Image 1: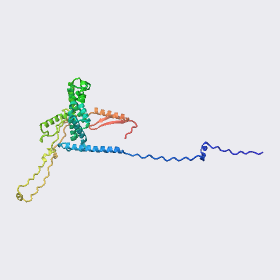
Image 2 (image 1 turned 90 degrees about the vertical axis):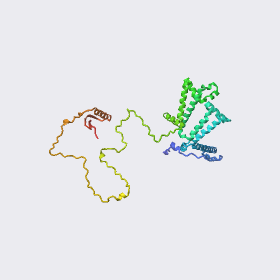
Image 3 (image 1 turned 180 degrees about the vertical axis):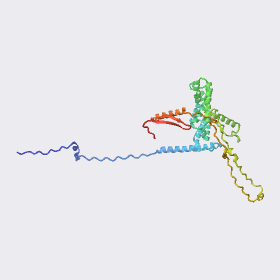
Image 4 (image 1 turned 30 degrees about the vertical axis):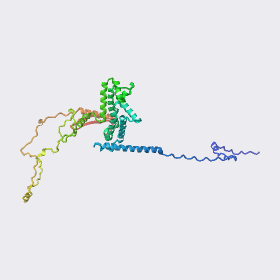
Length: 412
């Protein structure tokens, strides 16, 4: 009977092997055309770095105008410093010619607008702003600006920081305009009378006077306060502290009378010594010597200096005896102190101890030593050392403290 042999089983491909099978290549059909390749993207054009032509032209004009301004300002500053002798040696690093020249130009335009009543938009604007701000004192604004420009061109190092100058000038102008506004009855904007404001202290005078009048309700208190504000601004502008006010007043008096403020050559220029309180003054028993060579116990051994005087007549030298002088033997210098020897029949005995006064008895214990024991004990406790101070022995110079260590405490 024939038997059927079975073929070996085939292995099934795993999932990963099945995925790894290459896909069937698709052949393009004959009717389709191949796709055309895309052209490569063009790179964007590089942008220009730096300012454009318009910005370059404007920057060049700005630099040229700045150089022209500084040149004119330097020339005006040199002319201002050449007048007199006090500003010729000004350090170039401290010059502020540009600021001074600008303030001078502003003063000239303000003077032409206020004094000359020049027509035009600029003149009308300057005139309206000046009269509206300071009122009746608008004619003094050009003078004030010229004074500020003069100080800036000649002595900018004496003016101090710009902030301090602004505070000083504002305080001075506010004090003066406040007093002017107060004397005109404190006109206000609510009265709808702009001419009254211009005839008084203007906007600045209104701010400095009307607020104080509203708070204090009486002009007799406001007026002294405005005077104090004026004095404060004057001290700030002139860089004068309060303690130097008498000195500055004396200098102004001497300058007005034509006196010389320089001290006489024979006058003592030393600074006055500061007085000390008798309780805090240190008591000096031995004053220092003016001369380090003082008279001491060796005065008897001082040797006078030999003075050589020139001979009046040269013929006297020829009459000098040329015979050699006999040298004297050298005598040893006696000792200043010597111990005398006792003779054989002299017996020396010590004096009785009762002739000496007994001193105070020795203290075995004192408060200071007890305080040292307490400090030592506190230190041992802080460092957690098993030890204790059991006693001490006081001596004339050194005090010995006895410290007993606990078990297993090593000492290195």
